[in-house]
Image 1 (cartoon, rainbow, N blue to C red):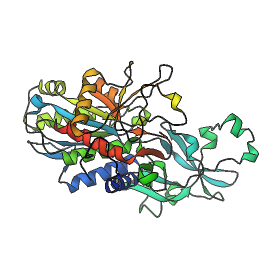
Image 2 (cartoon, rainbow, N blue to C red):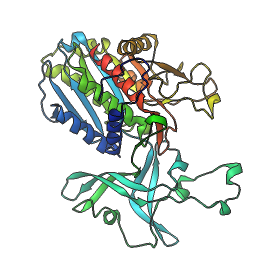
Image 3 (cartoon, one colour):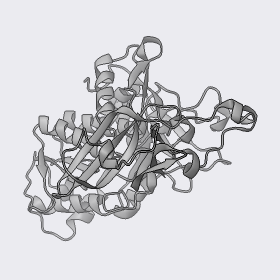
Image 4 (cartoon, helix red, strand yellow):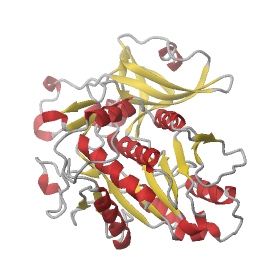
Length: 432
């Protein structure tokens, strides 16, 4: 993959890079798979897997990564200067996406059909999951204590929509879905005495006693539009940022500051977990890197944080051509226009003037265009990991993201060139 675009507004699409991103997304149907895929790519580049239970020792140039509970990964490259003096250059993203999670008693039945009991995870556009060919992905725990990732990538599930003949008011009054009653996937034409283990029998050898499983789209990612300008794929929020952060780290080379890429689980449900952005993991890793480098000064972590910058990378709302009035008139980012700086007066985004300027300078140095997003004053804003991480650790933070259409749909749309822009900007940040 190219390190970044050759100029500010390239006229071509890097098909090789876009295809690699498609492969990354398709290999990552759950946060556990996303971490496995990132670990595989890190392993290929010589990064060393660390265990949180072990004592760590690092020195300038050391590259490594650690995974907590399967769904959160922190990768790093130790800089040439002492960490307390040079600080950290961090990129944050998240591995999870809106979906539907299988309940502990997963198999159910209604009027004779075999169905799967699920609950909402995050804020999916529920109607986009209707009439789709669905599989399952996640992890299972076996009776022997082992944990295995599972991906049923064939269409074993479907949520059929109700015929217009039985809902004549649909087109005039809109679709109203009750998640308890209407989002119940169908897997068998006749109710059978099946457990979830039976549905996974071809994928797992052993007695299943627990699971973290979600529904996933079985349609592969694709390049579309004129000259393959667009990417149509699931889970772009926020696997595109995970991919870009990873690629930037792999291509950055050593700088003075220590480089860190963190991809947290559970952002879509508030980040409140041991491995979420509101939890202790990132702070644990940063503190251990300082200690593992031989620095035992109690003030070193605070000194390092004060000299650090975090780029929180999450998807941004591209202006929709059919709903342009949903954006403030002066803040309408477009697909293909480069990464978007997100600001919010009430701190739904952590960007301030200093961190905004930092990211602008990184984009300019990489030849990358930059765009801006600010909510309409009469609209509610979403949020992301940036404010949570900034609050917990005191890190100067800028919230940015690539522009996206159909956010939280089962299939989202972005511009293929934007991932190159983001990699270029993040790489420049890591080495600045």
